[in-house]
Image 1 (spheres, rainbow, N blue to C red):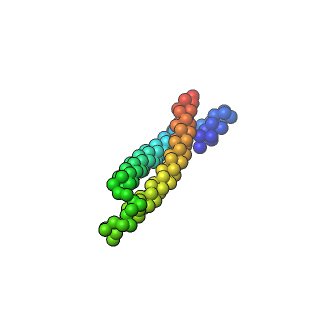
Image 2 (cartoon, rainbow, N blue to C red):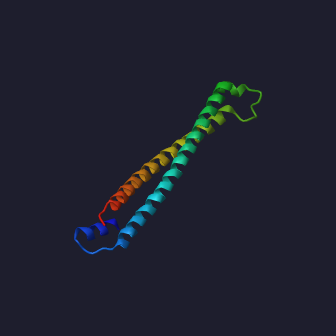
Image 3 (cartoon, rainbow, N blue to C red):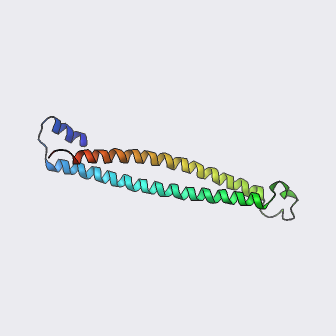
Length: 129
């Protein structure tokens, strides 16, 4: 849409203020939606960082509290086994790492798009009337 307005102006064709308003409105809406998406992804990234930190602390605590290699001789053998817990926590940690990587990629894409739309919006606002 912006390109149409620029084409019209470049070729000296007639365009109206409503064209400019329409383009500005579209760019603002797009920038607003991308800003909201960026905020959502940033919040998700922070949430995943917190989960990862808690998992890391839990793994450290389990490893410090118990001698995992000698658990087979434990009288509580029928209770949840430490190695099992550690394996499950490591699996959760790997899942969180994958989610973090995906979120980081999405956040990078959204940020690039947002920057592009903000630049276009700035250019449109600087066009002569």
